[in-house]
Amino acid sequence: QVELVESGGGLVQSGGSLRLSCAASGRTFGNYAMGWFRQAPGKERESVAAISRSGGRAYYVDSVRGRFTISRDNEKNTVYLQMNSLKPEDTAVYYCARGPPYINRIPITSDFDSWGQGTQVTVSS
View 1 (spheres, rainbow, N blue to C red):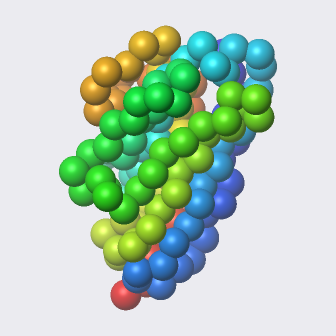
View 2: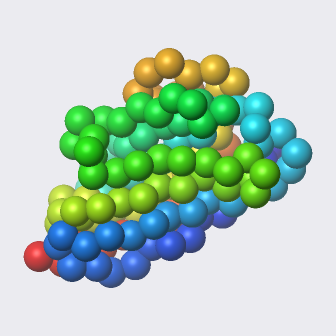
């Protein structure tokens, strides 16, 4: 198992930006794809984005494509989610998670095993 700790959430106005970070423990960070997910009150957890273990490939759900960017720094054991042009509907708890060694599609929850505790993102209108 790996420990994942998210940070960077907060309150922002519509149209604003936030950068989430997720720091991972251990020495195997670069061996796995990583993903970001979110869960709004009363809704199921949904996929946001995923990135391959090298960082060379990224996948986004339609609702965030063009506004969010996922990236990673394997030297720092950290994955990021840059969120621009935020909308009130982006309000949710955001989670990072460790995926399989190889990924070639938009992430699905069942492919990911270790999860962080989440960080709240609130976008006001």
